[in-house]
Length: 130
Image (tube, rainbow, N blue to C red; front, side, top):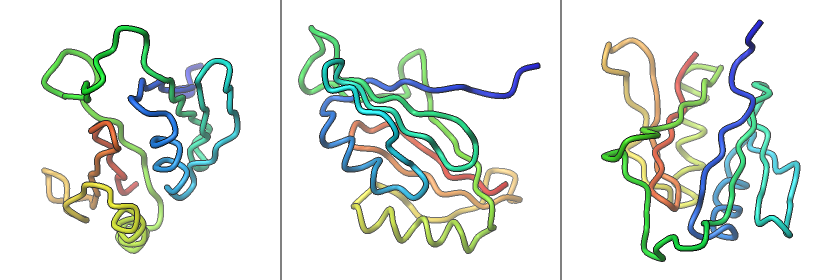
């Protein structure tokens, strides 16, 4: 009955900066822009999953950034078909947009390739080999 996540919503410090970042990622397609609500929605690849970005709520500190050292979200992972070659192409894109990444590596089990990176608000993402 369940088919996976419908969407994940992230609060971002600067919606314009985040729009530029996520719009540069392959297969992150901006499909809805709600300027009155300060909200953007992306479709992610073939997954049917959506990413919603929202401006900060009133009272959010200007210098606030994501930290996985708090309760809540640790990271977001997206599966990638096409093996290591697909990940290497994604790595080139991440470098082109100055995303913080250590490049393609193997997972802790040493079996699947992955690339981790951080968005402008320090949220960790992974592109993970399927």
